[in-house]
Image 1 (tube, rainbow, N blue to C red):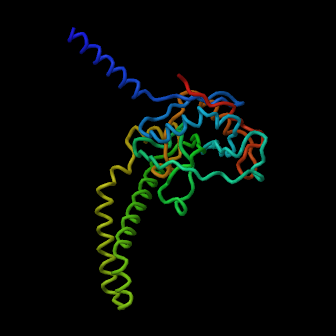
Image 2 (tube, helix red, strand yellow):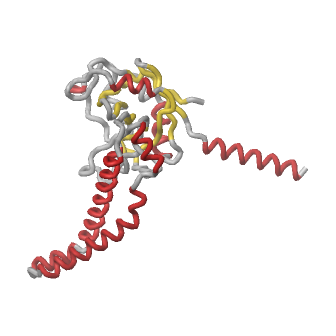
Image 3 (cartoon, rainbow, N blue to C red):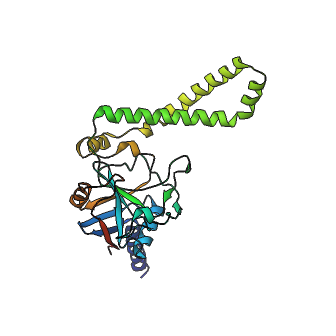
Length: 270
């Protein structure tokens, strides 16, 4: 009897783990066709937020309001429903979801689902907009382009480390400027640059693409310059032909489709 109970417990726990690990799938029904997307469990806040909005019907009858060929299609603005005019739309509510940038695991490959956000100046934590999302299209990339992007990312990291060191020692810097001690200032700057180089070198591997990711960008395409900047929280599993059809639509000077692309319903697959 005890053995039987133990077996049942093991089966139950196994089923529970499998249910927990299964990635949810949503379907976006549009007037151009349907797009099926799986949401990553490694970005639970974005996953749950998207599922909640879908379940409440928030996305129903919204539009893809920004479409740029070989870049992405963007939608989900709750103030831009079908038939509305963006010039007279209300200001978007600035509700956010904390950033869940899982890089280099998840990248802006073709078909990636990511969250829109405001710029670093007003949003230094890179928190995502609660509602707006985009699906990546993107062009194929060369080895040279990917290497250049990796180098830019590395240089930005060094700069951020250097700025952090400056900020921590701001009182010292101010005192040296008051004393006009430029020699000591230059010495400190040199030391911080060296330290920034060392710290960045330790993290450099995490800023580079794996061979598999590089191959994806070179054969399928994407927008690698957005990696490590925006939260990627899912990917298209069916319906990229619909996404491709949408990105070909004629748009105005604000990148808004001349003919509306309507998000009719976003449903959760059971």
